[in-house]
Amino acid sequence: MRIRASFALGALASLAAATALAQPKSLKKMAIPANTPPDIRAQIERLSDKDPAARADAVMKLGGMGPKAAAALPFLVETARDETKVPINGESQSIDAIVAESLKEIDGPGSVPLLIRLLDEKDGRNGALTVLGVLGDARATPRVLRVLGENDGQSRFWAVFALKHIKDPASIDGLAAALKDTSTLGAIKVAKLVHESIAEALGEIGDARVVPTLADYIRTGKFASARLGSAQALGVAKRPEGVEPLLALLNEPTAYGTVADGVPVFHAAAAESLGLIKDPRAVDPLLVCLKECKEDKVRAEAARALGRIGDKRAFDALHAVLRDATQPSLPRLGAAVGIEALEDPRAVETMIAALDDKDLAKVAGRYLKSTTGQDLGTDGAAWQAQEGGREGAAGRRPHELRRGQEAGAAQADHEAVAGGAGLGGRSRRNRRAS
Image (cartoon, rainbow, N blue to C red; front, side, top):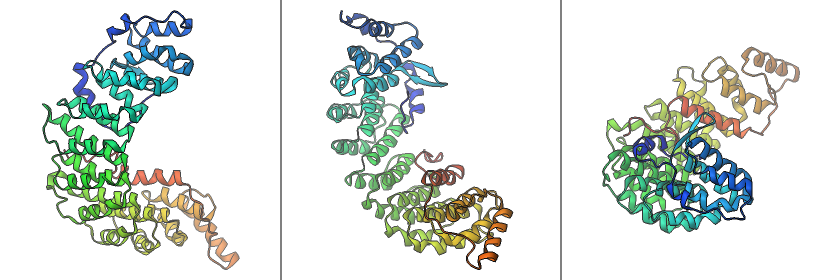
């Protein structure tokens, strides 16, 4: 069991380590009902064990019992106060995070009112917010918004964590107000994380009302990393209203910041988000960027975005970049990924030639497989022999077209283009934007 979240949990964990709560003493004061089955009673008793590993194991075993362990709900809710870290499958996880997964298995909705009451107490509040976020129940939104408005940076962070996962449009106004709050709340590192997290939360909610807030922060926001996150969040939101502010960012020479902020990464993020929105209004500006933008990573993201949008007008420009061996490798790779996403069969010969380039071979091999129906891997000589033989025998184009594409494999290489080459994706924060 583990929480899958994209927030900068590790960074915040180092800030919170000194104040993390151990096993809650309140558990020892709670009486286990007399009619509790023996196996459930045994695990409830282990929740008070001095050994954190034993407590974590008890939480997981109760979760594994499912709804029949309903008698343990109040005890697990109290255990949500326990922020002790334990090793699980080679990774360090907090007990409150494990509690969240177990509550989902037993009876998530039934535990929500109990967890909301924990928010009235300072001790264990962050753990309760973590669990409420994982459960994703909108009943918690009003009370979590009250925590967001308090003058406590770490509680604000975990409140945003909860709201991001709850995805309740009713939280938009509160999140927008918090994003305008420029106070550092005693620690500028925490304030920066809060702003980054709010941008992510607004993107996940995806309502049209998030666009003006994110667009304004891109232009005027306090923290460069959160401005970058706002551009990325517009892509996650996939709202057509986000196209205009992203095009403005793509064409703004300073990206509304300074050279120290890493301007190309902002431009790359704008191109990536435009590709996620898939609005045809972005095609012409992205074609201009593919031709004229100076930074290789920005051109590569423009190429990748053109493929995602799926407009066939982009093929000629992408093909020209791919077949030009004098072009830098990164834009050529972006062009290859873009053509693959377009599912256009006209690039077979160029892709065969690209097999000789180690940076392009993987994409080219997969494109050839999906387009021709043959699987010769990345062996350029084999592909040339195969296609040459077909052309001579049949007297026609050297391949049979096939439209089906392996979407999962294509996405893996989209990520390889961005991740391996340092492009501005949502999970790849600009290390210079801080």
